[in-house]
Length: 476
Image (cartoon, rainbow, N blue to C red; front, side):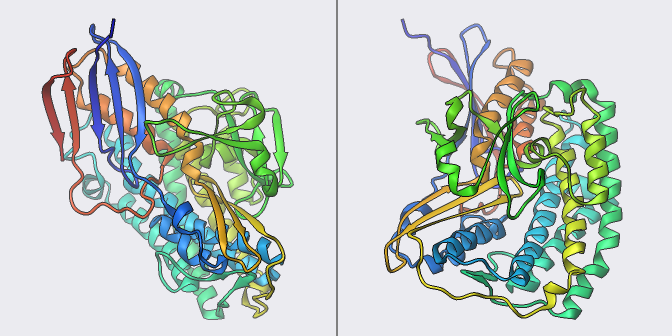
């Protein structure tokens, strides 16, 4: 006998990049039966890149995303370096990393200050008319201005080298196409101290919130998973390291080079989502699922190689007995620590004489029929894998986008929160917002070059056991 259910639909999820929805199936007695996070946009880059010259890919692939184009730009350039069989000169590699730090600063600032902080400052049950970035600007003007300024600073770093803030063009196969001028370097250095001070205030705000809401933080969508991220000599690395997987209890499960990713990472597919489910092959799906991004990286590494961020990491790990932090709300704390690292690392790079040198490019011909480029995007480990013919024409592309790694965890987290806060079809707005906030913790990027214009209302449909629409609730 078929068991028909009520269904609650949150569509679209607000304050994230791109379009997704959440469906909650209820049994006839009102209990939560099944919960799913759906990604409703289709990514076609792996298909329509076929037939292009591989040298075009660092220009094509940033169009995947308007928020983190630099990540795709750099991963693509590294894959192209591998096809040429060359290592870019040291000045070029360091300039790529300068842009990468600008990307982390602007993207993480957007996530925390604009998208997530209203929930923390006003509360999950606050009036939606207030619980937004406009309300933040009214009630917490200094924090709002700091967030805007921090994001602008990161974007200006990107624009300085890449010519524009979105979809820049700087990295090319074998190096970069532009040097950094002394006056540009000095302007970046001059802006760092004020932004660091504002970031310290934001860190204090988050730490106080998590301490005052310790019970909530320990429970909210918390999962004990493995964690994956790049490391160099065991330390946090965002541009060029080895891929490390750490178990839920802190043991290093594996560590491998980017060229070996395919032997270690598989992709599971579900018919109800366009977003795949990456997993660690030796453990299979779903046992081999893991988390990436700020929380994943801080759990995967031994330390952070800059002094102030390292001290913050030590404090971060003291919140648990074994130093492994599974709390999903701590993604916000981890994100701010990574901004601090990006600022410190940017300062190190700008003080390095290499960034003003003009040895920027190595030319070459197709030496390898495939190339793999891996970087840490703000949202997690990003993999570009190209296969070409003897002339360098793309034959196959595989992209594992950072958000995909967290797909299983986002589904599990939303399900947990739904079971905690939904007991029937009469669902309060705060419960819906809590489910949305699970997704905001991971800061997913779902747009894949599809951008929303105008209003994005939240639509909730409540249906009875016969599937008939009983009630519709719309939130602007």
